[in-house]
Amino acid sequence: MLDDGSRVPFARSYEKTHPPRLHVVFLDRKSPDAVSRENGDWVTEPDPLATASTGFRLSATLRSKPSVTSSVVVPPNYACMPHTFAFWGAPGGLGGTRGFAGPDVTIRLAMLRSPFYDKLYVAGIQVGTAPPRYVLGDASSVPPAHWLTVDSQGGEGGAGLAGTDGMDGAPGAPGCPGQAGFPGWSGSDGRAGGDGGSGGRITIVVPEDRPLLANLVDGRSWGGTGGSGGSGGKGGRGGMGGQGLFDANNQPCAGGTDGVSGHDGATGLSGGPGAPGLRSIVVAHPKDLFDAQAPPGLAGLLERPQREP
Image (tube, rainbow, N blue to C red; front, top):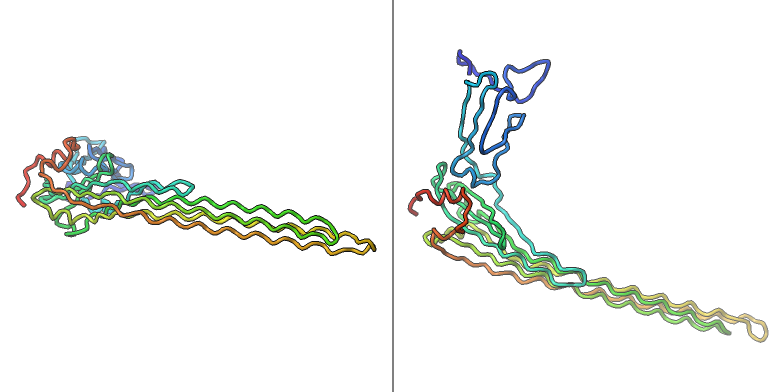
């Protein structure tokens, strides 16, 4: 803003023929919560807990006149966070082995309070023993059910081994008449595919004073699909009929007939689907809801006084 009250925006693009009066490159922009880019954008801290209590603290200083500076705190907005998570077990190997079970997933839910939201949903999604991933949401704009969708599916069963091809029949011996060719060998049947792995266990942990928070999670456990059966082996070709020779009167004899080809082997059976996993709800004391080694951002929220339910 100029002395006369007029506003001059900082341009984000630069044209040498029409240089702007002000440009973002004239500013020294800093933030402990984001990285500034040359085009004026900011790349924000991806961990939502890191800024849950502080917001995004941004400052800009005019390089040519450092006394001209301004700071702002931008409240975090969680609308763009993902709400659907899917996890799979590893597939079975070649030879029709069973798929691996889907991973066990634990979702911990709480309603906390931050400087920017009186009611803030915090969900920690933990797969096995890996560090949890956190999702935050403004409780006033979140649907009352199925805010999060979490799937754990068993791995697909391995494909069955293919059958072996049948050998070709031996040729018939020459003679008068020639002998028939021998039939080809049939191909062997393909082996069965492996069964799908079972779905992983879904555990939802909620505070004992807010059991209905469990409705925010649509936890689904699926068995993996069965592996495809192996293809049957090809039947061997029939042997060629033996060559006809000449009889005592020097007349040509008939050649032998070709042998019949072997049958193709049948395709192996597909594996069966895996069993779904269990889904359970566990209530816990609010202080014991999250692990004692909660990250600093979460610990800061837990230490804030919360509203009564």
